[in-house]
Image (tube, rainbow, N blue to C red; front, top):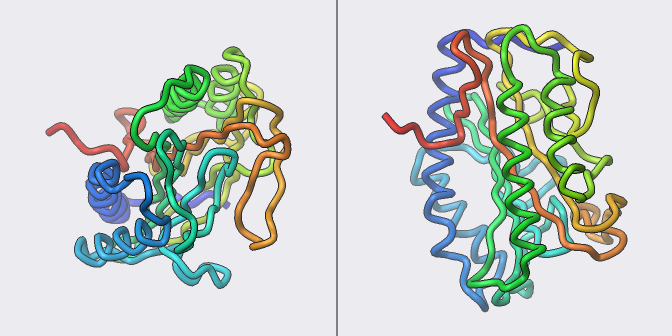
Length: 253
């Protein structure tokens, strides 16, 4: 069942999203060659506490960190580790979910460490971000969930990239993962009718090569089977009477 959030719930989710977005705004300055992903996770943990937020990842199914940090051919769910260090030109995906007064916001971004001359990698990140924007545009009352998924999928496949099938976005609210599943491909006009008060974590996961992935020995990290580069972005979106409200992007008010 898809839950409908009232104004008070949305206000708490919005506050969670704004505080999380400000943390992400500071992240690029932390992504230096030689830093370990565990050090990055530790910094995020301090920022979460400083902003009076609660991590929804820490302890989830026994997970021991407040973020997932995935590098290059790792798609999602990369586990921070002290011996896993960044190198110049790496493509790093960071995913964090937090709560404020019991309500969640989920966000992910793809970053380059330093500079990269890899035009395909740059294009991958651009298209992944664009596909998210195109999906969000369709997150309007009266549309169907398939309209969101189809817009994402069309953008990715038109650019010649792969869409990861084994993982998807999701509903969000009091819990990090709620109904429904939000696929990154679909058929326009199909799926649940979108209504004011619904909230979704929309998260395209895109590959340069084939979309097949596998879970590594740590039982968390997801990698591309063909070792191709992958990108991942995510925003939490609430459907309002005025259209989609992206709570994980800083308000320009």
